[in-house]
Amino acid sequence: MSPILEIADLKRLAKRRVPKLFFDYADSGAYTESTYRANESDFYRIKLRQRVLVDMSGRSLETTMIGEKVKMPVALAPTGLTGMQHADGEMLAARAAEEFGVPFTLSTMSICSIEDVASVTTKPFWFQLYVMRDRDFVLNLIERAKAAKCSALVLTADLQILGQRHKDIRNGLSAPPKLTPKHLFQMATRPRWCWNMLKTDKRTFRNIHGHAKSVTDLASLNAWTTEQFDPQLSWKDVAWIKERWGGKLIIKGILDVEDAKMAAETGADAIVVSNHGGRQLDGAHSSIAMLPRIVDAVGDRIEVHLDGGIRSGQDVLKAVALGAKGTFIGRPFLYGLGAMGKPGVTRALEIIAKEMDVTMALCGKRRIAEIDESIIAENPFKG
Image 1 (cartoon, rainbow, N blue to C red):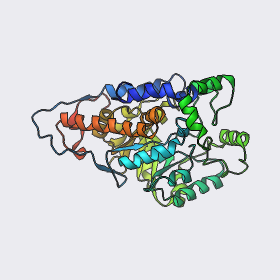
Image 2 (tube, rainbow, N blue to C red):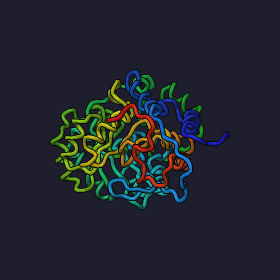
Image 3 (cartoon, helix red, strand yellow):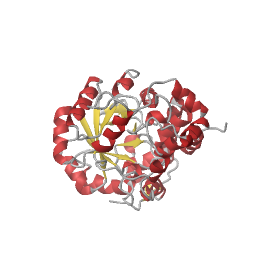
Image 4 (cartoon, rainbow, N blue to C red):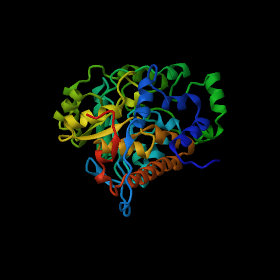
């Protein structure tokens, strides 16, 4: 095997080891996928300023996100069906993140449950909340997150209605997968994945199955998830959630200056500039393109993070230089997980950290706290 040097190496390996329907789920965007592509390509348009003959010793990437110490300004993003990239995926990724020293965020639509992840971790993780029509279920999720001692609630604001991802429809995506001839063939060509899946009992949405009313089998689970995302979710619901949670709150899915201003008024601890990885409104701006405008508007009132398009440590550094106090990575850790399990997640984090460290030094900086727009030579997205 050739050495794993960049996130793209993990992506290629994951594509060989994960059944097509689940790899495509992680690697797809809505409609034409133009926003998904822009999330990545817009980072390349930002040019760095090289500096020389400066003291590059004693470098550190350590900082804080919402007051929590982190080894670098990176958190693992909430991603659905993570446990279908690799058996027990959320549990493995959470352990890798904890050992590395960065936050892990568990999705409502995870395969492993809140309790599953809590059983294999020793430090608090973050929990991402989707607001469903069934408010009793939402309250149940919040209470379960409290019981697991989650240190932050990440409220996703941009999934009231599901954007259409053509690959998922064509692949007949479900969890667990339907045992059609096409799916059986896909799985048969991924024996390592199948062997690991046979050794676990975690193959469905365990945050929902057995917890939501009337969800007792796979048929009722599929029907429930299809109809439960609440299109009536509004800003007034944020206050309701914040009151019942009582802890640190992050609002994810902000891509507009006016929305950022409204989010800052809620008393949330942070917002995440995000377009859901290009999986919702195709044709929207990339996350990095909107970051400077949003930082200019609210950066002095609320902590601003960025999610979407990060594929390297250089991308993280560029986001920090443009005002982000932290970043979220989804696909990079999913590629690592699908490629190699827990060691793959660790490798993804190592790659990003090394790229950040080297790039920071070559920009003439020693500490992440020193990173600002002074390291940017050219920025087409200036606020």
